[in-house]
Image: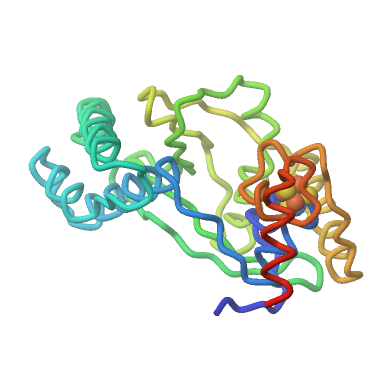
Length: 254
Ligand code: SF4
């Protein structure tokens, strides 16, 4: 059972902005997003990189050992899909190792949990990576495993990076010298910056969302149904079929 006490986190704010009713389903009604191949792949690669860096052994063999320990084959429709995905993970991680993995910075912190406050609300999250270099500079890195690479403008306006910059300052006591999203499927790290105004806007938006959640405002956003994990089960979904409606009615009567 999830802890339902309210906290600000990037995932929660982002879910609410996508659709307030989706927020309610996940965070108040404890509905779980069904595991699929993309989520499973992302989990496996994140865990592999965490395990690889925590091992302190930066050889290619160590990276593959981590992959084989952390690989999850659940969430795929067939064993064949899982196998193809595993081969993709090997390829992605090989490229990562050639470019970055075998040249580690001086110090690396992976899956860094933080806890702070935004206004009167607790603020929590996990930063994929914080690297510290020989010259004392620090770099905040967020991994993305999906196949689509974002435009610079999207990266420059990404809410998650703004909130994580704030977290570095208030929870971890430093301002990152560089901020990057590492698109693993393209082996491409794209840099961005954040100024005071962008961080303040992210805080303001988070507090506004938090207030709406506290006021029980969970109006469905039907414009997003086509992209939603609950499109076939949510009672407000504009994509539900008549067959789905029938199933719900029967289930309700039992
Ligand atoms: S199916 Fe539509 S209304 Fe329901 S949670 Fe998803 S986006 Fe919101």
